[in-house]
Image (cartoon, rainbow, N blue to C red):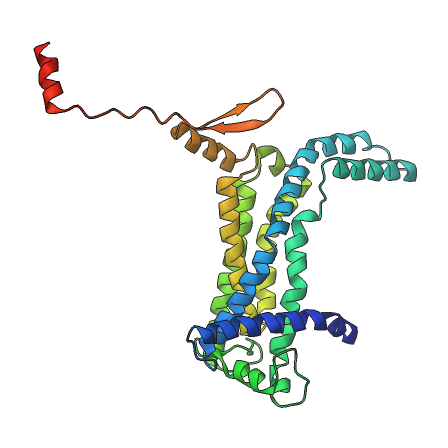
Length: 316
């Protein structure tokens, strides 16, 4: 495992500096540096910085996901074409044609996983930082970036609703730690489930809800929260705070995307169209294929008529 820790160390260093920078800013606005709240908010700040940096990747993920939905009908035809061909040459030809399809539509079956995959090293780096706090505070381990002996002691003694940030569910006999950890794990799992559910049920066209890939995605909607719940008992409270805030961000980001830029043909797209029609907003497609949103004319404002003019009108 030493090789893995060596690979994680540069990320740990970056995580430590972002946390420390957020804490420094919180001190400048008046929060006590030694308080548990300041270090909890520093972890929240770390989460917001990381998720903001991942926004461009999130939109690439949307593009790739919609590309996969466009590819799906062509992929079915390709699979039917090679359904009864089991020889090596046919398998290779099918793989080549699949890659050409992905390239044509600028998508990949792994693109939707990229934000989660990129967050995993950050997640484990934060886990390592919090896990080594006792050793750094006691002088057994070297500092990680700005987190030296004094700072490590501060973080280690910081609490979230009375539970130390470096404690885990399994390694503590304190009831308060177990309650706080359990609540965070439940919130984390529930937010993960609803984020995946709103994506699957509201933002996918009916054609994408059929077949083996759709079945697997529906199964993962239930499997992932269970995995997170089971593994969450091993992680420090600080990591669970990061994970929960990240899930809340994902849920809000997903809600905005589904409401404002839904997948064509999905339930969310139908609802957006209804809202636009209710407001009188229509889309006009020009000859070159460009779609323009046209709002209804505001209408001419009627000028108020003075009492004298009203009397003259009545006489006429």
